[in-house]
Image (cartoon, rainbow, N blue to C red; front, side, top):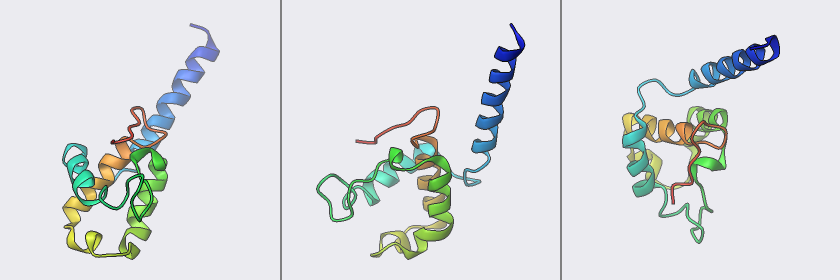
Length: 108
């Protein structure tokens, strides 16, 4: 391999490592997916009052910022009725499947 290829591989690995640190500690993506579908998709679908939201609606960093700062201001009682663990799981699912993640998903 030439130095350009090695540099590119190094940059990719660095970027992946740096973004994976952003996820919420203790979140479980497998548990987050059904929680997201059950609690969020009723309003956040194509015809819903909250507009369609999928994991790919935001980047990994944007999902983390949302859950750190804005989730508490979410209208309605859905967020207020979820436990901290459930919110961590939903955040982890959305982070893992975000638009800039290695495996983006629409969660249809």
